Image 1 (cartoon, rainbow, N blue to C red):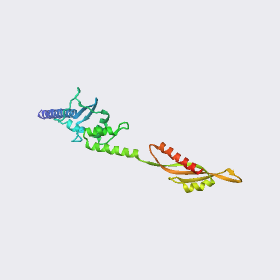
Image 2: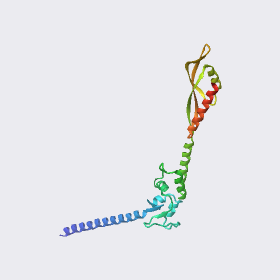
Image 3: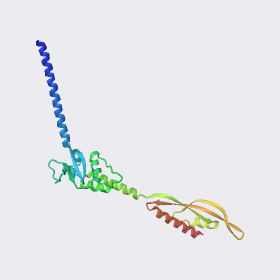
Image 4: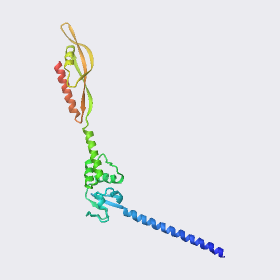
Length: 229
């Protein structure tokens, strides 16, 4: 009986220990959930609600958002009915700012102006993001102003007598590419005069206002051709 009672006592003790551990785990989980809820923050930016964490908003200790989430903030910011911090800014440009704080990368959709994101980055005083957006704007402007060169070709018709003069007076960047004999087109007296097609080319900048340059080049060629006829 003593041995039997001892076994039963050990089993009860083991069962109570398991129940105690289980209760402790549930309590820890509940505490973690409460801490998780406290970690989340709502921001009402210009009427649009953003849900994020204190960790994300605290990436830059010098930023407006870092100061906003402190236990005793030095910023006088109101909250809406749901408890979200009210920020009177454009929500369109806040998205890229918040995403940068989340993963450290600058991602801007094509329909969003970089200048708008820069304005928000400066307002929230996020130093590294300000630098990234400025560099992106600089690269964008450099690409837009970059000059691409292209070859423009023209075909000029001239007589055999005019050909020598044309070769000696060709200027303004134009150069011969090909000469095509198209045969005798007319004659004076008893002599036939051959006609030629001269293919000339010129390297020109291909800018945004390319059509205007195209008309200008065409006018120069026509003037050149007229002076040779």
